[in-house]
Image 1 (cartoon, rainbow, N blue to C red):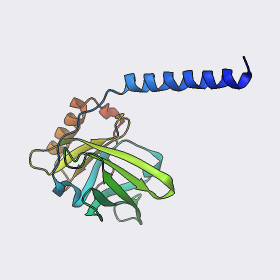
Image 2 (cartoon, helix red, strand yellow; image 1 turned 135 degrees about the horizontal axis):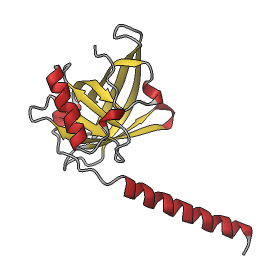
Image 3 (cartoon, one colour; image 1 turned 180 degrees about the vertical axis):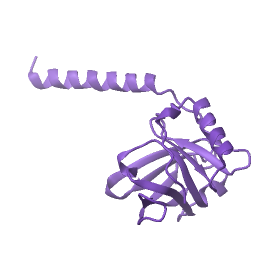
Image 4 (cartoon, rainbow, N blue to C red; image 1 turned 90 degrees about the vertical axis):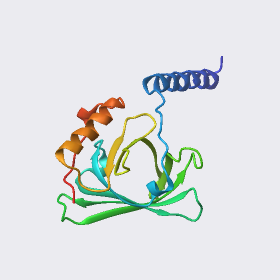
Length: 177
């Protein structure tokens, strides 16, 4: 058998195995229905999975505005460097609600430099004051609120993330505004 065919066969097998393992390791998460008001205004970042992009970021937030079409959301993500009064860093993206008209809970945001994130709303509090979102594989998770929560509310948020199956020991809680 020619070497390019063996390599192609091997790559197909490896790719298939990778997809199977990823699918098995990350069961599909259920999303909750959110209204159009969810993608309006500013949400404060209360907790998150640590990642290179947010190193040194505190007092984080996401501000949503209506885009050109009903399923488009203009996103500004920001944070302050090192302290809540530190230098402001922002990045802008364009989101598309992928399940628009049904649950409105799955949004894909495209940022500069070809960076794309999928945000799925897994929980929204009954009073619509806070929510939990994650990527589909639950490797990244975020907790957002309209205002800085009390300690009791923060415990409730973390407990809800745990109930959703996330390892809350991985979360970090940068200082708020």
